[in-house]
Length: 202
Ligand code: FES
Image 1 (cartoon, rainbow, N blue to C red):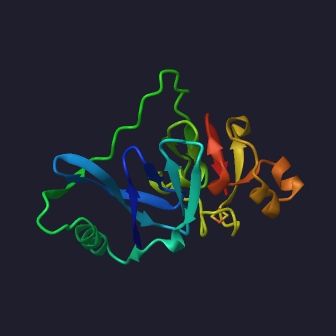
Image 2 (cartoon, protein in one colour):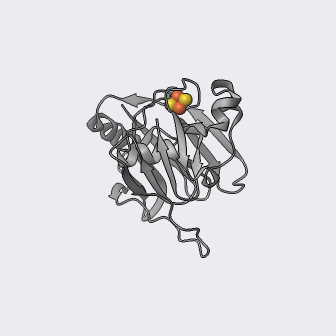
Image 3 (cartoon, rainbow, N blue to C red):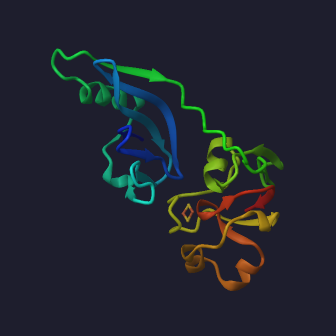
């Protein structure tokens, strides 16, 4: 399944949630100016899109992916984009481009290394504060998942090394994991963010 995420420069931007993998990036250019940005993302699990108000980044809305129009095939999503940007005879273009480079923060923390123990100890690097399930999906780490939203418990995993390099346990995780499991380092990968080296098993 594919969905289209829309951003309007200076107004708002749409950010994919865990379980949603960006595949193609487009600029909508009208009379020489970029009026909108589109990302065609592959939906690998139920997810949420973060809509960030660019004038006030604290104003964030999360929209469940089930409310977005979805397309079985990539070609269908591309066709929908063409339809969206067709405005009579206006000088409008849809320009495909590479993903924008991530901004380089001056004091960026070290790049965490993540070891997926059950996957032949596969080791990958990820930007600091990455979501563990998203890294697993992107790098084929192999952590099982279904909902991507902290509900089903499928992504239950144990942080075997580097527990101190993960963020705080979320209320959603406490609904699924009991105190004994939390004490042993169990987490839900879709709710866990990583800022240093870890090793994870499931
Ligand atoms: S994938 Fe369902 S709780 Fe994480």
